[in-house]
Length: 87
Image 1 (tube, one colour):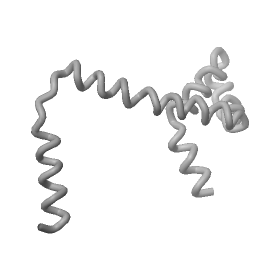
Image 2 (cartoon, helix red, strand yellow):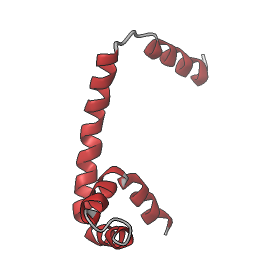
Image 3 (cartoon, one colour):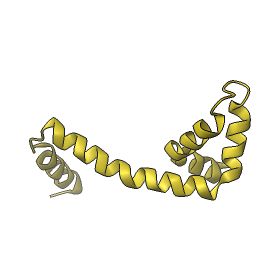
């Protein structure tokens, strides 16, 4: 049995489970907790990137540019990580 057939069998078994909408929401919330925690830590460790984002947002959104830039950094931390790897 090759690896493709094994993977297809495991995927078929995993997708064969019946889940309610409530269970899917719960899974999404449990997966969001570590993602947001990593984002908060990332944002606290990179204040210069938040300041740059705030400077870019300040002319467009004078009230709350700092909060929006922090929220963007928390939510989009994987993109920030990718830019560090590319540049």
